[in-house]
Amino acid sequence: MLPPSYPVDEREVEFSAIRAQGAGGQNVNKVSSAIHLRFDIAASSLPDAIKERLLALSDSRITQEGVFVLKAQQHRTQEMNRADALARLQEVIDAVAVPPKPRRATKPTYGSKQRRLEGKSQRSEIKSSRGKVIE
Image 1 (cartoon, helix red, strand yellow):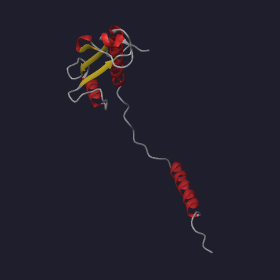
Image 2 (cartoon, rainbow, N blue to C red):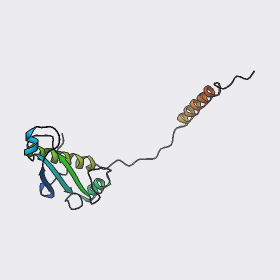
Image 3 (cartoon, one colour):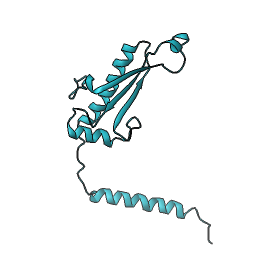
């Protein structure tokens, strides 16, 4: 896997330990092993283009204030959940780091137009033959 082009600065990320949900016996009730990560996109040191693409994502983890909120509770230990949360944040940032290729408008070819119209006329013929038979 490629190294992240824009690594997340841990000083810009706010971590808080919370109790995990779900099954896990007594450990889940006693230990705050889940991690709640908060990353303020606007206040981060990421380039402006990446900030814009992050804020434009239709991701439910991004609040209206532009804060990326993530909960990691996959592992039993706080350290592993912390590393998991950072890795997931890095994946999201890496996904928007590469700008999308601009779409170039193209016209359909003459042959593709002909094939489309031929298919439509065949379908029309099939449907018209389903009607009542007039003698």
